[in-house]
Image 1 (cartoon, rainbow, N blue to C red):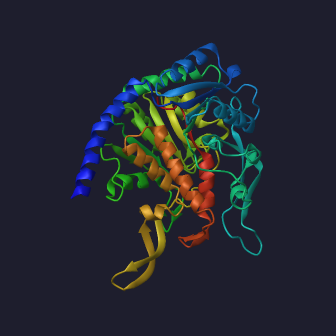
Image 2 (spheres, one colour; image 1 turned 180 degrees about the vertical axis):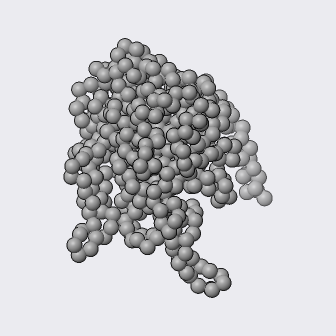
Image 3 (cartoon, rainbow, N blue to C red; image 1 turned 90 degrees about the horizontal axis):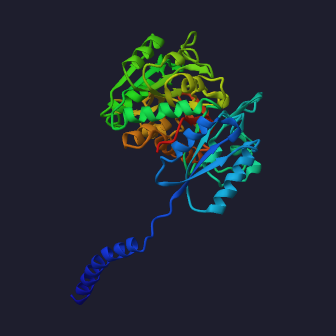
Length: 443
């Protein structure tokens, strides 16, 4: 009984002390240290209006210590990375994020080499895929400062997995880039502010124009519209409850134009293509010409299955949408993708109660299957965060963090999915380097 009385006394005393402690901290003027948000630009690649707009945008971030960092003079990404890393060490604290203004030629991106080992190979081939002609760009390695830049000069999935280079792939903060250049930035920031005023607190419909081309036994494996529909309709996911959702599988150009005239949308475009835009296998339907005409209402874009931001330069559908149309932000690839592992269905052994044994057959992917290095895992985690009230950039960051953690854990795991055994995590690593958030961070 005495022990019980002593315990009650301590609890009551603690309850009394806590408010006093909080009051004492407030009275002392101690406030939590603000994290650093880096706003990187090239002073020789902006005009006076651009710079004024950038400064005005930066000032809207009230909960961070905002650092304007001039990238002029840094010829490659490793040098800029080292400069940022050194500056952060000097000022201390945490990093809240990195926002880049400019093309890859203005503020350098990292160089990525397409080299990976997806399959085990055979007697005639070692299973290594390599593109010896092209180099690609990626901002992904700006997402932490834990790496030695000597390993970051020309990265590849093969270098990370097979060569075992000590490269940390887990992002610690969001990275976004506005891939516009001198004379284009101020106008865009004005559009962004107008979009924010128009949409804050409102539900925006999700519209998908999907041309799946990974067909297996007449099943559209890489159909992102079907997957997002399942996110809403399947109880296991239960997302998009308060969001309108529409999907189109034909007459893409006409339907995208119709939706743009009707109002603001979150647009998903899935199909074949390249930096010039998406095609239905034959004809372009969301390309550099058509995005200029999508100017009735603002929209965000989630581009799936093609490298619509390849080069992070002026020669892409993303650049033209941001600079000349009313695209506000884009999630897009800078490295070609073939959607390997993006399964909506898996042909795997599953238990049949009638026969009392496991029989091969198609099943629709569930949450567990997504963790088998399925790129749709990123899509699910992104919309899960959106559903939780997170901003688009924060949702993108959280999805990439989850995808990176999963990919690193599975980096040596071969899986036999739908009849083909492969290192599906190799494709996931490349997705991490390829997917970018192109636009502005949310203040």
